[in-house]
Length: 289
Image (cartoon, rainbow, N blue to C red):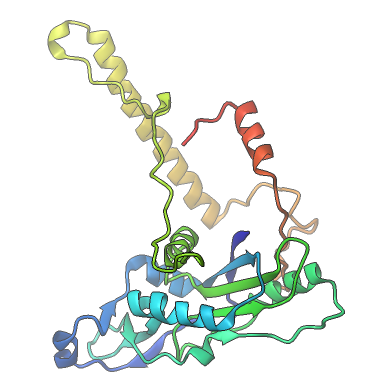
């Protein structure tokens, strides 16, 4: 069982300020890396990703620790890098700088009340992670191991990391690619094949030939792009207007007084049968991907 959620940090997310020499940067490009525009946006927003993984067996902490060291730290530099503000130039820019990693700072085994309801204990603990600040003096990720059974798992692993490291899809794929089989640890996990986009929606209509004489079809083909450009312009205008002055439509999650609370929010989940999901897909005549 794997679930991904996002939470916004409530504290300042300004990177550390350091000076990086040009000689060091040119000598080893892997040590200093500029932060991408998307990473800068996530840095300003202070958004974290929380991944909840249900295991079928109790937590084997030495195996997890060895896997994190050999797979994540060795192969992916972002897991051993911190965010800094390079002040060696006039226009300071955020960058990734590699740093030594102490695994004890990133592995958390909390002590929870053994008499508490397991489901509520997991939800309360995951919800509390959205309020805890992350120490920017070390890489912005941490594993939390809840080694007690619940109704759906023998134990639970929670990964919290900053959104500038990656998004939910990439992190989930990364965790799957980094896993190994207990029967054959040397075997690389089989990843699902790319989706086959064979539906009618993916079939592009060819542009009518000018020599065919069917100028009506050519006009229809050109008009379809005009309509596409118009709808794109309307969508962008609505997004900008919503950001500036329009309010979001009221939903079941909107408070009656219209004020968004800044208090604690909970992460709740529910397991759905895959057969039920496929039944809804068939009833809605959705395209298979």
